[in-house]
Length: 559
Image 1 (cartoon, rainbow, N blue to C red):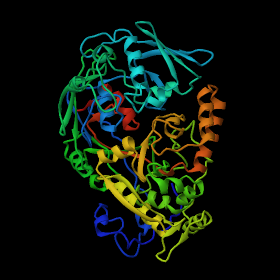
Image 2 (cartoon, rainbow, N blue to C red):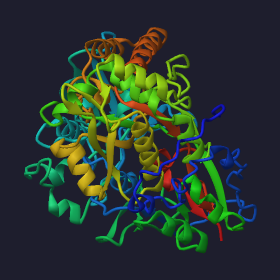
Image 3 (cartoon, helix red, strand yellow):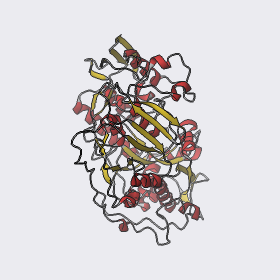
Image 4 (cartoon, rainbow, N blue to C red):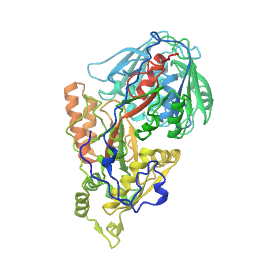
């Protein structure tokens, strides 16, 4: 848990309109924020298992909330889509809930050549698509080629960039060749690499913005549940696939209910309209004392950050200034990260020293540097970088004031509250920073498509691997901020070609120490995932929900 926390300064400059964005009145009051009032985290119960049902019971419908419309197209990685896709599709390999290690899914076993350039996957026999067509190695080749296709521009494209060819050896054997040894390939296949049906998609024209509409209207996978119905904006239903290759699931159906407001999900899990919800820590009191609900806390590969656009063609002034490491480090000292953890996350988080949390035990770098909250040091660093305060107190350099706008997605209390604190912290050191929350689709459009933004306060859910080259390597497919550093690129490449576990750990330790020093983005904290689960739910794995959703065939409902 974090140590002592300084009080966040008063925020009299925040407008009344912005104050209304915080559901807990986070920034209200002229006297500032007394963070100590938050107190230590209260103990929570772990999920209680029903004792009245000694063996799993078949039947029933499991109801899960999503916060946006669903597009069940595997190349799109948005959370609401992958939640549904986990029920309808399989991957070659998946994460084992207990320790996030790769385990068999559609591939029953695999091996890598001595030179590290060829992976051979031996597929399970007897697997069929929901329409009865047999699953074969042709589907694997088709899928990998699609994910690597620049026209489709999947979020996984960077993960498949090292692949030079996919060979179908026989109907149940596929061989993947890479241009260099690719030590993290197996780990990255566990992420969101859902296998797609070649027989339904081959020959159709689609790209990054045009999707195969016939398939979206009736998606077909190999997963434990098949498509039922989709009422856009309301719900998406999947029903049991009786011929699932691991055996018939216990549940009859799963309903993914679109609930855009987090407070509504809490109310609905409390009343039994939903069987599970993922509340913020601030919403836990609303569930206190509900006898049907148990709350659990799980680690998750999630890092919260403040990041700016390095691209000077998109963000000319801020891009140039943000490109200086001293400026990024000054921001790191200016932001009261421990205060954010205490006030926004209520202590249910850990201070980030990079993108990897301590839960990924084999790869977490304990001694990567962090930056203490020190506004005076931040001011000094900016002074040394050539910034001077004008008569209005705003810093300027080369005749330009240090002013910019940053965004997050609206309707998310934790990100809104974090953003407002970041805004005030930066104003305290003389930066005229404006905060503009955006509707989610507009936020994603600016962030991932047009790249026309100055800065944003957001989060990334990343794979359970130290190989995050897609996020931080020059021109990485998920390097949305446009960061580039030759040493970081070199270390990522070294990690990719190294299979020896000890040497690999040494390389990534150097890499993440350097990335923390660089402050490629201002790494803030790793939240813990809160799950509020109806006690009738059984078989739900004790892990983060993105991993757990791959095992919905094991979930059942007590009477």
